[in-house]
Length: 509
Ligand code: FAD
Image (cartoon, rainbow, N blue to C red):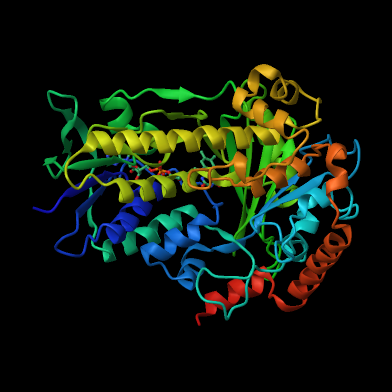
């Protein structure tokens, strides 16, 4: 008999998992699994989550979504990284304060590792983000990461997308159904546990009892299966990451041909930060803050100040969350994906990325022989490690700040808020730069390149004086930096603007 998966929840996590597993586990073939997704009409989706990570390209390609269709249907635009402003200093105090965390890894075409040469000054006075790859200069000039003639999800510069989250869930739904997922609109009212604590079935309002071999909890923060029914504990990380509220708004462009930024703009604020995401027809802007350090009225004032006069009438939406995750996301025959498993905060767009990771792990560890225990053990260990490492990476942005203007920033650099694992890495990086030994490429979401961009963007100093004599290829390094600079000029001359590429896709190829 075919194995049956029941996914409860039809937000981004539910439909992404459904469409992906349908492909990876051949839902449309006799030997594959049968997948049903049940989503409530009465309980809405969260409807935020507009920034993604480059892994989304492979995920969407696997699901079978066409890139131009994504752009047309979801207002999607091309994202090449995240620009951080005012994270180091209070505005007005000190030099201009911004850096990019680009998706493109540092140029390696010369065969030379360039970072140590930049650290000893051979790259000139520009930041590591600017000299390591052509991406920052190209994105600063509003360029897209690719030409219209490039194939779906492929480009000379690495990229992800910004998109409208509600529209994306709709597109994923359509594709999921096309991939063979059975769709039910109904509310789960009760989760039945059998004698050994596994799920025996779920009761719905209109379709009676539904049962399956594997249940996937995609019910968002409600965590109806893994949390409420099975009682798997949630590990709060608020002692490390303080932000737990967001207030958001949408802003139309002043004119329909206004340029579209090809990165998320993250601007540090007194008690948190704002995101600014350019979609095709509007910008999505949100202010993330800590309720221990600010209140809702102040936060809305900060958001409105960012929006300026054009946003005076903008409607705002409010969100509450608690940074943390479940150490056991797979228990017995139930696995949580998306917000029901965990969420830190919007910084670095890890929400959807974690759903992608979880879906990939489920496909690889699917218990074909019925051994849930082994799959669960491996899944939990793999996911927990990714959570721990992503937590460190997100905290890195805060704890290196030189801002001391509010308790929020002062508390963020307090030793008690910095995980030991992060402190240990920082200690290592006083005399050597982050390299592949610090990273497990099979599990870490953020590679050494990401750590380097943020670390040095935040002004970290790695002292190489003791090793400077061993860095003998100054001339080669200078030539390589000049080559990156030329690549940037070439990219600016030849790549279309983000707006042009979006319009091209909208017109249909
Ligand atoms: P939801 O969207 O909440 O969906 C839950 C689903 O479960 C719904 O379909 C609902 O109907 C269903 N459901 C619930 N209970 C029942 C029931 N009893 N019976 C049947 N169905 C039920 N992530 C990013 O990657 N990038 C970002 O930029 C980003 N920004 C964010 C900003 C904020 C302020 C927040 C809070 C989150 C952000 N995230 C971001 C996270 C992102 O929004 C989520 O990862 C993503 O939306 C997935 O949510 P979900 O599908 O798990 O839950």
